[in-house]
Length: 74
Image (cartoon, rainbow, N blue to C red):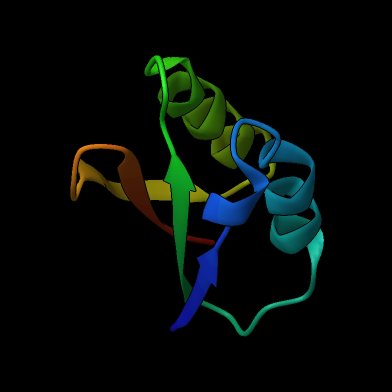
């Protein structure tokens, strides 16, 4: 399991997230991403990116007022 904190990137987290998803990971490795949601549009964009990169979205949840967590697996 690997955790990636992308909150410091604010609304521009997608390029880094895509870069991470395209890296080589162990088979069936779980990846956890944290990012800021702002107006909630990043949630759908992140789900679309996960699917585009061939991963399955396992969980998506808000864990405080501004941060979101998604859990993915190849």
